[in-house]
Image (cartoon, rainbow, N blue to C red):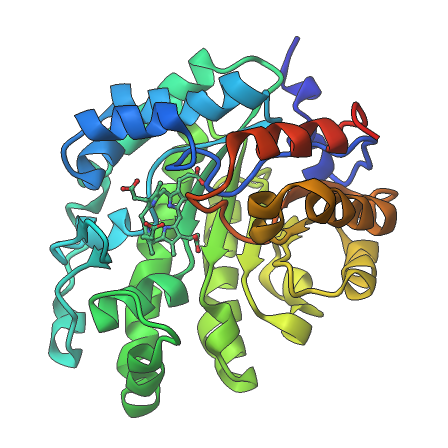
Length: 344
Ligand SMILES: Cc1c2[nH]c(c1CCC(=O)O)Cc1[nH]c(c(CCC(=O)O)c1C)Cc1[nH]c(c(CCC(=O)O)c1C)Cc1[nH]c(c(C)c1CCC(=O)O)C2
């Protein structure tokens, strides 16, 4: 048995599988009691990300419980600003915090120590590939430059990333420069993940949906294209999923413009439009995470609609965004069984 049998990878190469392979964004997380148990032992959230023993354990937990077709490295997109010395911390009940960057600091960002700082994460990737079942695809990931920059500018999460949007209008050249730095270190980081054993990688642009049309091209598409070109210049066979959450109709040419193999779709993407996008290449998504919280008919109906419209083309079944802490683990079992056709 070899990588041939890794279903998520097969779909990324353009194959249609029935039933489609399935994994869930944030599949390792607080909705699982075993995660909460490991998390309680870890100290800070970043300690968990940088401890290969614990990071391997929490990555494997959802694979053991549900047999998902892909495991996603347990880490966070904000390890990149942490490696750039932005003093990242995760405060209980507040989400992520870091020192907000001002325009004069951008030229001084030092990318020198980034790779050494992220060594433990790369070690986790290597150990995961050795410990996972052969048929499980291993996904690495990082944040897209725009999304990571929004947190670096505001120093925290905000409802609509107004601070980063304003910064981009006031200092467009310096903002381009920040995105270029992030694209460079993130592409290097993805290459290291691939070399350590990641079968494919996903680029999370979770805040793409707050950008206007021109800004989407300049701040979301262009830096992601640059990253993908940089990865492929070194690893021509790299398989890449790009997820621009909330981008709506701007997803129309997103796959071609970025060069990604597949695109992730959030739950607001209409299925008829998703089917159009799927004619061009594999898609991943797009069940509303709230359907998993609700369970029952709401869950079944959402699953069936996706399978009916997208099931005859290259599809990786997923949620439209991360699973939330209040999701019932039994609802996730129901979801996996239904997608696999064991529960009709
Ligand atoms: C924007 C973003 C972040 N992190 C991530 C994104 C992009 C995807 C998305 O939009 O959700 C990506 C991410 N974060 C995490 C993973 C792990 C892998 C997986 O998907 O299972 C992944 C892929 C773990 C995590 N990252 C975080 C947790 C929860 C913290 C904890 O367990 O204490 C987990 C499991 C913390 C985090 N990290 C981030 C925020 C805003 C928060 C706080 C919100 C929250 O608490 O859910 C930044």
